Length: 257
Image 1: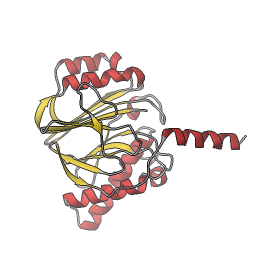
Image 2 (image 1 turned 180 degrees about the vertical axis):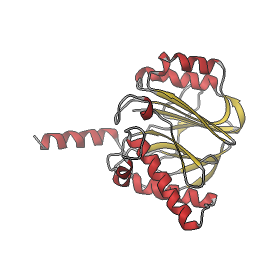
Image 3 (image 1 turned 90 degrees about the vertical axis):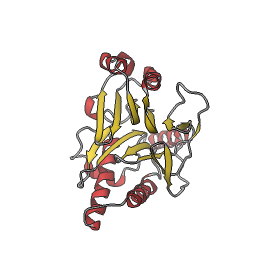
C-alpha cells in the first residue's frame, strides 16, 4: 500500500518537519517518492524511483526547507508498474484549457473500465496515471461541450461523477489538484486521516508528526481550498476492503486450477 500526504492551508508555512516525518515511512514503502508543491502559477514536481530515506537528493531538498500553502507527497509500494521514474507519483497532465491536473493515488483499479484506453498515451505503466488521463479526458469533453470553459461548480460536479463511476470494485484513495481546488476521496476503511488547526487541513494515509488526527470522511468526494472545505460530493456505499478482495482473488486463483 502506498501512502499519501496532502496539505491545504490559508497561507504559506514550513512543511519541512511534516514531510521529513512522512518520508520516514518509506522504510516500508521503498519503491519511490514524490512531491508536488503548488504555487499560484503552477506546480513543481520532484520524484525518484528509490526509497525516500535513501535519497541524497531528497535530503538536500528538505534541508533547504519547503514553504508552501498546498502540496501533495507520495511514497510508493509498487503493485502495478515497474520501479522506475515514470511510475512514481505525482502524475501531472494539462487539459485543453491549459489547466494543470495533478494526482496521487493509493490503490489499485481492479475494475479499470474506461481507463484502459489510455495505455498508449501514458508515459509509464501504472493504473494511477491512466486514471489521471481519464479524468483529464472527461474534463476536455466537458470543456468542448461548454465552449471552452468550466465553472468551479461544474468541475466539482464532474469529479464527483467520476468518483461515483470508478469507486465500485476499486481501491480509490486519491488526491487530485486542478490548480485551484484539492479533491480528496478514499473508500478503504482506516486508510486516510485528517488534521486541522483552523489555518490548515492535512490529510495522510497514516498519522504522522502531529497528534489529534481523526478519520477523514469516507466514501464521499471532499473539495478543499486554502484550508477550508468548499464542496462535498454525493455519498456512496462502495467500501473497498483489502481482506475481502484478497480472499476473492485467492478463491478465483484456486478456481482456475
